[in-house]
Length: 114
Length: 110
Image (cartoon, rainbow over all chains, first blue to last red; front, side, top):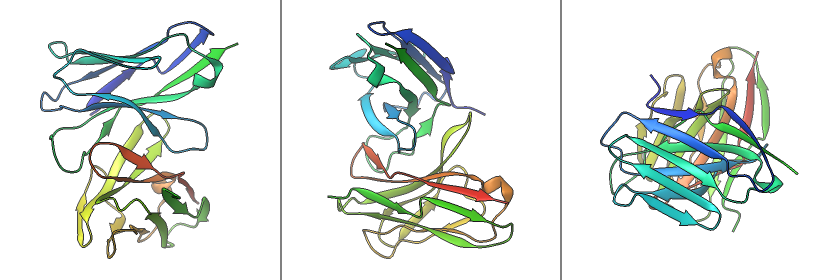
C-alpha cells in the first residue's frame, strides 16, 4: 500500500513554464515533508522541505505548498530551466526528533525543453 | 569531504551468492540508512542505524543484514541473492532531518 501517492509520473514543460508535482498522504502522524531531486546516475539530494506549521515555503525558484486538511502537498518550480530536468520524489516521515524514516512517493520524471 | 561513498558501483551476482555492499561517510553523522530504488516504486527503506552498535529494520528488510561497528561505516549484506533483489541500492547518512545519499550501487542478480 502506497502511503505517499505522487503524480504525475512524468511531465514535460517548456523553458520558463511552471511544473507542478503533487503528493497526497494518508498517515496524519506525518510531520516532515521533503522533496528530493535526482539526476540520472546520481543519488537523490534534498531540494526543499516543509513541516505542517506553515502552508508554504519558498527557496529560490522552488516552492512547497502544503494543505494539511486535504493531506496534500505540492512542488512548484518557477521559471523552469533545462537544468531542472530530473526525477523528483516527495517523501514524508513522522517524529520531530531522531532518525526520519522517510516514505517516498514513486517519483516524477520532469523534462524541461529549451 | 567525500560525503557518502558506496562501493562497488555495479555488481552482477548469481542466485544464491552472497555479497556485501559497502557504505562510508565522513560527516560524523549519527544516522545511516539503506534504501533500494526500483522502477515505479520510489525508494524503500531496508535497514537503518541510529549509532554505532544500534540497527533496526525498515520497510523491506528480508534477505538483508546490517551491522554498524563504527560511526563511519554501514555495510549491507545480501545473504543469498535472489533475482527480486535486483535493484539500485542507496546508502544515506543524516544528523537531523536532511539525508545525504551516496551515488548508489546497481546490483543485478541472475
